[in-house]
Length: 386
Image 1 (spheres, rainbow, N blue to C red):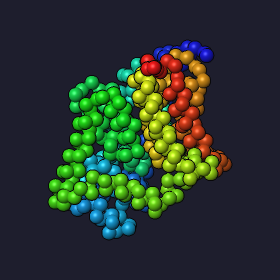
Image 2 (tube, rainbow, N blue to C red):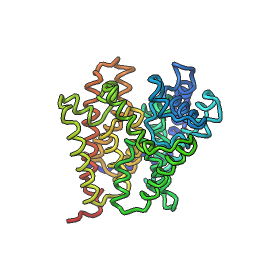
Image 3 (cartoon, one colour):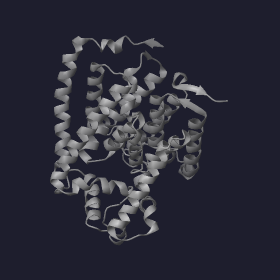
Image 4 (tube, one colour):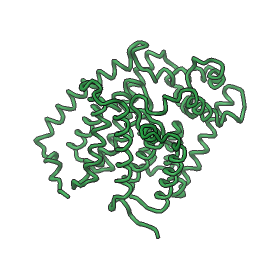
């Protein structure tokens, strides 16, 4: 185990101007490129924001988007909780071209808030905060999120608000996690195990959002409560390749497919989920480590694409705040390098020298190792119940 002397003297004020200059130059380059991708005209621009925009627009025009999906095979897949279409109302007031720009700068605001929250809760110095900003802005998940118009940064800042806030209304931010079902389960289960009243209010908000949806389109139907789940099931059944590791996807099913044990995937997800819940129930972790454990578990168990790995940003703060280099530190440093940079390096510089299947397999294994390393890290556990 090696002590880190201020992370290679990173806190030395002499480095501040260079970090500032690096942030300005790299930030300008990467943000400009992301902005051009996000606002370019179809089919070259944002490929994900239009679906959130169109679905929300149709809803606010008093159309049942789930009925439209059933009737039109070319329509978007409404796979998210009803709350997202309600929250997106301000963006539907403008043309899609203007809304893309507004959403881009909304994501910049979300990123700024994320950095502020992480700086405060990991006690990062100014220089380390600058380095954190540089790593975020230059990372592939971040630029993909901006360029595609995804909602990962919005979800992350909401979860961070819920996690670290002491305000009574923080339950609202937990309810936002339910927008994307693949991020919600472990955070909701953790809240339940901690006997927080937040989960009760979060569920109430989710229920009220469905009721409001039904009231607004003037069609009260109990099936609305499970419509997003039905859509997810149908998409999974019709587009199997989209969920088994084609392209850059890193999750439990990717691991099982590449190891040729896909038929045990359902059993695997049940066993892993039970194991996670058992650990959350039996052990009391420090707040920062627990957030990382739940985030990594969510990324590993459920289908996610590379842009969803903005949820690994807190790990960077964790690494910058560490005082010693050990095996766990090195593992998670490599995990960040792999997902934030190497996947794109393999595509753009190495010309896909390493096949997607290998990249995905290694990425899935790295996620699992990262999860286990933090789960059993001794100083991350406050108390072990016997």
